[in-house]
Amino acid sequence: MDRLQAMEVFTKVVEMNSFSRAAEALEMTPASATTIIKRLEAHLSVRLMHRTTRRLKLTPEGADYYERCARVLAEIEEGENAIVGFGKGPRGKLRVDMPASLGKLIVVPQIAGFRALYPDIDLMIGFSDRRVDLIQDGVDCAIRVGPLQDSTLIARNLGWLDVVTAASPVYLERHGVPRSLADLDGHSAVHYFSGRTGRTLDLNFVDEKEATEVKMRGNLAFNDAEAYVMAGVDGAGIVQPPRYMAHAHLLSGALVEILPGLRPRSKSVSAVYPHAKHLAPKVRVFVEWVAELFKQCPLLTGQGDMTQCLRDKPTTTETPTQGSLRVDRTVDLVL
View 1: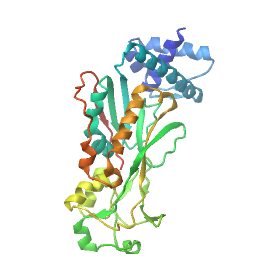
View 2: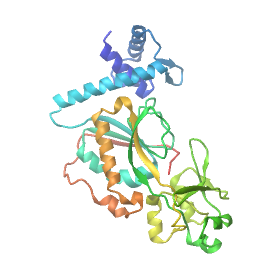
View 3: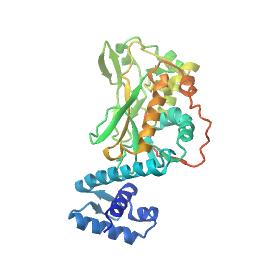
View 4: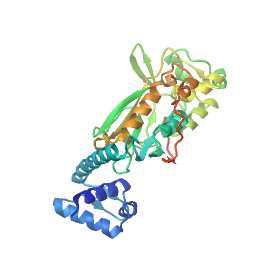
């Protein structure tokens, strides 16, 4: 048995969640891929995955072995690139997942700069509120907002999102401007709910470093960030979006910030990736690039405007002629 080939087949099957798609990518028959995995399991004397007609699921041993295989293959790829690439830089398919609003407003407008710097990377960007399983879904890196729950992932903090409490002038004229938390009893909120858990999020405020959650009435809720903000613009109630999403509406007067002395908690933004992939050059350069992008965007922390986020593009004049870009979108979006 060719152990390196077996490792390549196994990781490809896991990342594509399909024997047939993995076999096609590796230019072999599905029967050959199946035989290689069976021989690998016999060699290891352990079951690596459970197979059903609809999907594959790794066993605990299979998940551990996948991370080890992916780490070995990443090191081989990095070594080959260093020797054969002659300074051409990172290459290969890079699949990342991120919240739609953050991706469309902050990342995608700058993505041409990343592609100019790394033309040999085939970039796939997915927009989703769903907490993707990075290993099972074949995702190299994900950008997540809020507390992280999966301790098996490597995480790098990219910064913080400033959040603003706002309402439309029409709504405030109709219901009055709240001056304190007690005044919120007479107001309605547009609610945001998680597409993953279905849980509705309460409004939150920080007063002298003490956080307070406020349950407000309201009969309208969204799990789409853009719809949530637009409902606030249309006068449906008080909203608490990230400042970068509300910025243009605040400038135009379509939204008015309220309770500025009781600002909501900021939200952390992190890049997460499996242990096995932290050595891959394509992942490393993307994380470094997006970290610098967020650092140069003071709008995320409420200390600048959109033009500052878009001003500092790479000065390279190189035109990407090799890599490719694909953007995937799912129904659920996240703030």
